[in-house]
Amino acid sequence: MAGSRGALVVFGSGPGIGRNVAAVFAERGFQKIVLLSRNKIRLSQDANFVRAASAGASVDVIEYDGVNMESVRAGLEKVEKTMGDVPLECVLFNHARLGPSKFFDFTVEELDNDLQVSFR
Image (cartoon, rainbow, N blue to C red; front, side, top):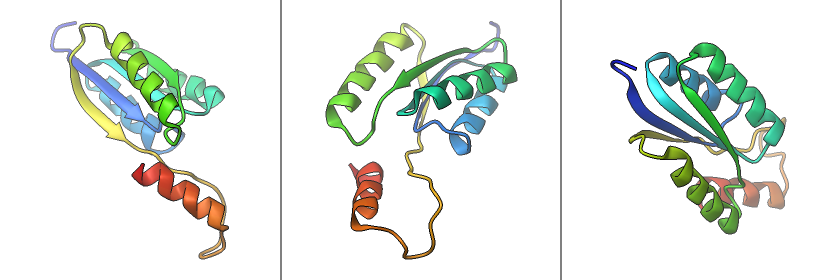
């Protein structure tokens, strides 16, 4: 593809920022988009959304959990295999736990999970 660009890898794909950024990159000529998330069903939906933005982009999905270090290692190995010889041009680190809550209305476990996702 003339004028094509390399790859974008999105850690933490989802219905908000992750898949929308991926769709814009696909529209702008990135030849490979790799989406990672722990939700297999949503990954499939996100991939379809990105493919609809650009038929020219190859979209791959990898299921992984950014809090589980074994899953992170396995996910990174899969990213490397998926990339092939396409140069990595951009990485979006977009981990987050989303859910309804009121300000300061969360359990210690929820806070711990949020901190693990953000900083681990």
